Amino acid sequence: MDLKLDHHSEDRLTIVEVEGEIDVYTAPRLRELLIDLVNKGNFHLLVNMEKVDFLDSTGLGVLVGGLKRVRAHDGSLELVCTQERILKIFRITGLTKVFGIYASVEEAKEVHGRDK
Amino acid sequence: MATVELTFSALPAHVRTARLVATAIARRTGVEESLLDEVRLAVGEACSRAVEAHRLHCPDEPIRIELRDDLGRFEVTVTDAAPSDELEQDRGMLRFDDPLGQLPDTLMSGFGIAVIVGLADDVQVYPSQKGMRIRMSWPAMTNGLPPG
Image (tube, rainbow over all chains, first blue to last red):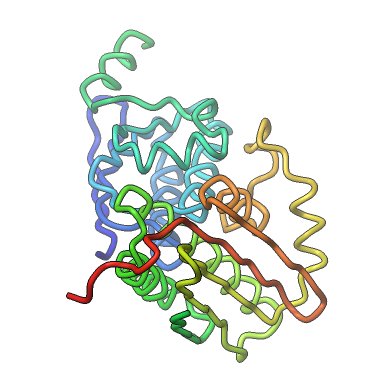
């Protein structure tokens, strides 16, 4: 399955919807989108990975790159993910300590609302 | 011992094909369903690493994968032709406690290998000036699944 990307803003949070496979072939598209969003002033990103079928270390690198960019603007990049096979790669690499990972978009929005 | 060999050009688009072939053969060999995601990810990581290395050093050379049903184990060997001494140095310098400080936006070869080590039941990495060979294996039913 190819990669489908979409995004919309809710309040000051930009929600990035990702569907399909994030690998060495498709990850550059996600990287371009994240860079574009940051360049346009969107510094609080929530990447919804509930429809991601596959994620490899290239995809992780893109997410880490995005996090570095938003942090340079005191922003945030957090994830929505409950799939065990996707969470496993975050655990193996220790990145569960680096990203905020939520069980749903609603939960993430609630936490962001509290932090405002 | 049944062996399937696959060679492909160093193009990112072919990595998905390699993953699909490896997963299909793993299933046929009798690897448990619960391990197939690990096979898919580990083979994908090994092939991605090889593609990145070839694109840097030898873009015209093909990458080779051997998939083998060997005495109750499913064994995959990914062989590239890019000199790998530098990559091994990178691997030694990896620090997972500070990924933001070290990880670029693109694939970092050592990061991929670390993922493979975390996924495969048994992994051996053989770096050399002539290229890197990554061999990994998982338990499988001795006779594999009956042909469908």
